[in-house]
Length: 491
Image (tube, rainbow, N blue to C red; front, side):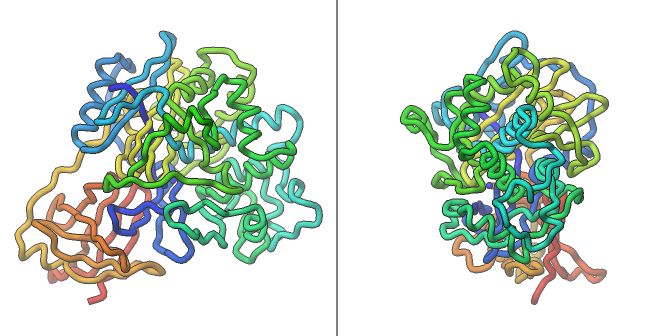
């Protein structure tokens, strides 16, 4: 075992699908194409619900090399095709481990998706420290002179609202319509962002309840760069990466990084192209390595002093309610509290990569987990959380059962997601096949019991068929951490 990261979700991964089918359950980065209206607003932190209800057992918080290697070796053995890189830093220094069929190490470059939001949060804290902006400053003061929001309420949204996912903005802008589903953020420009804010679907209200928003973080990154008189990719390098000595964390890859950039894969193991970001870069555009991210985590955990330490402390301060009672939101970071102990963390992903990073200050330690398989396929945040606090359990792989043919045939048919696609369930091998809309290739689902099935390629997402008093199947419920999506049967 030698190096990697990430928790859904998706998040937050343009156009990720379950296998070749199109069930776009996004984690941190998965956006929601307007023309593909299936509900996919899975919480950015895919495993939060699981963590919140997990039984926490006693244990010592140690992370020896043998234990880390055992955990990741077991994970890749149970999920063929998965490659992991795990980095660990504490008072003894930094160590990197890897597992899988590919030769990956601490210098291998990955897309890190919504881990970028942590960098955007640090940029906000640093801009406040420099006196350029204030946390309670409304966005209307940072937009071009004369800009008119569709709703005055949107203009009163503050920078803290954006950073804390409390701006009431949707996950993606209303006019976000990817031209290339395999590279969904490419081509979205400043004029498009402004049109979304000025349009009737701009939305936004200061002090709203938690609602994870790539739209909001893309806007936040843009406004901070605009105030500094530069662009986001330059700002993040000048104010975060260079002060921390992070020479392999960039949006635009250097020639050296390009040679070390690993191929990403979707949940079915198929290669997928990298993502390019436009004006929404602040929500997920960065690429990085385990070695580089350990430098950030070491500084955040207080293991070394840097010019950024005051801003790092401010970014990690819990300020707003999060998606579950045990979690609050800082500036970019999520702060999980379990029995009085805090873990500061975030996860991320794109269609081909998964990432997690987190740290604790008691003891002072940090963990980075990186994967070159899309995050929803391999919910790996549990590895990082478990290494930071052994009381947080590792996910257990589901155990399938074989159902009689007559039982399987009761589920065959079509199901309608409200304001979404038609889902068709057919037979396949000794199980069932899931097909969304007109997708050409269905995805296998396997039985956990007579009524509940799981996607082998996508950890954390299941289907439960509903029966009436006479035993007739009347619909399905798609289950993901923190969300249930109903789909009544059509025939």
